[in-house]
Length: 460
Ligand SMILES: Cc1ncc(COP(=O)(O)O)c(C=O)c1O
Image (cartoon, rainbow, N blue to C red; front, side):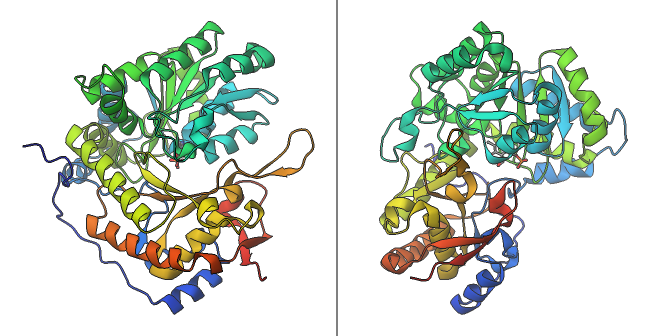
């Protein structure tokens, strides 16, 4: 009998987590200027800040780490890493980087010039910031229904192909040095992209001679959704689907901290050797030599094993159902959960839970902060603190399209009883939702402000 909802692993090592009181947490958050990024991890009970690099590695990964070859050039560990990327993603050329943003930075610094534009279904914050620092524009062209948290469509992460075609016509292909697609679409509630849409996006880019680069962080979860949701793929393995997805792309950037189930690492992979050699020159200056790219040999070994574990279907079945279970628990507690739930996280529409707080007072930050104070649960805002931006014409500050709280689930870390506890915390917060106040910024940096901003509760 298949048992897809049960953890397909048992626990060999445990890490104690500290409990704090509500009063202690209120003080801790105030001390962190009401920004959860400033709270010490040991003061968090359940940490859903991110699924990035927070994964539990397997015994095979830990033992592979002992075999790390720490040679500067031509290490055996690089060969293992390169082979895993070639086998699982199908690209012949591979450059390691310290993490995903390193890959983005190297690629964009090589290909993107000031004033140019890069389309994507949705850029994640670091992708957007890496383009902005090049003086380029990051253009999001996701399908409109991604903003509808109750639509039951199965691929709400898709690129809007009509918008993409129109954007290229208007901008001119010569001003678009590369085109991207993020799978799954983290900024659009972790929603997947269908195989038909990946191929449609590739066809448009290629018709205009624009190189097609996939942001591949969660490619395995995306492949699982294609297998389980897209007609014609039920009998195909996730491994085959992954190769098919990448077969239409010219390259990818990857944060291995997601679907390669490690704590650090990333890479750029591509088909064209001349592109690899161009990027390599930047890489050596900024990340490290081409056979380690800022990683230790042991890190490369962990990625090599993790990439293959990440496409294991019993793991992916568990992963999806684990995430869906958290979505059900939070919805039962009264939170407005984005449906269907994505692969790596549950997203809650804070604007609907806290309609009395306007976007300018960051309802999703308010909800996230109350979840911490109530039960030590750390989540992250994906809303106007992270993504508000000036109107290109009027310069007026525009809110983000959604005010979401993301509960990102580290891989293989928390059990169902942890998820049940989070549901209890959410229930308490929802009970007193009307009394929750908004926040105002008292200090912010120029770029990626959500990481370092200082905030205060707004007094009525
Ligand atoms: C879609 C997406 N792209 C890129 C990145 C950047 O990866 P890293 O955090 O490893 O730099 C992330 C990280 O969360 C992401 O979700």
